[in-house]
Image (cartoon, rainbow, N blue to C red; front, side, top):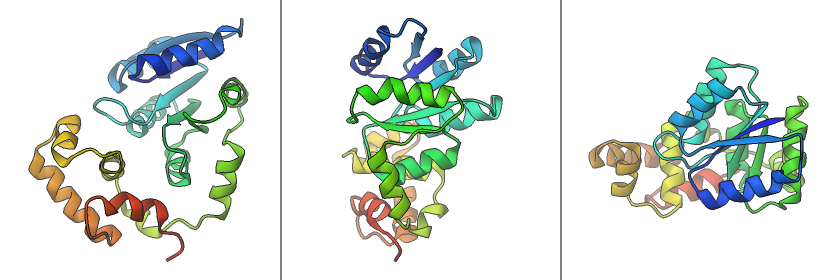
Length: 203
């Protein structure tokens, strides 16, 4: 099994490699950002791609979309610090075959990759249960991938200036996006945006 890990944190990549090192049939290679990740995918044609959501430049969601455009049969597992069902639902709607939170039991990592490689799908049990019972606010369906990325970065404590730098746009553009997001999600402040996106259920 050939596994591509796209993550910009060396410690995370090293940890993933360590988990897979005991598996003699697994070959691992990695990339630190979306651009090199896409190039690596096209060059190496891995059986499974593990993609972090929070990448420099393009988000993991955007990378997954680009890979699937090139290879509709791609088997992608989204990897995130966030175990909220809203992110998992977004990953699945993007076309990913699995979702793993970085705080999940490490012993599940290899099993998840093998399951996806075999043509299956994978969600941790607790997360799958949350998704089954959650009624996600339909307002989220209005958001573009870029808007979801801005909401996620705000929730991570990033300032609008830092988000503008990360996404390569002007501060004014991010400020305008945030104003639009507040209207779409009924949020009063910038920090309310993620709370509304993740907590609004069946309103």
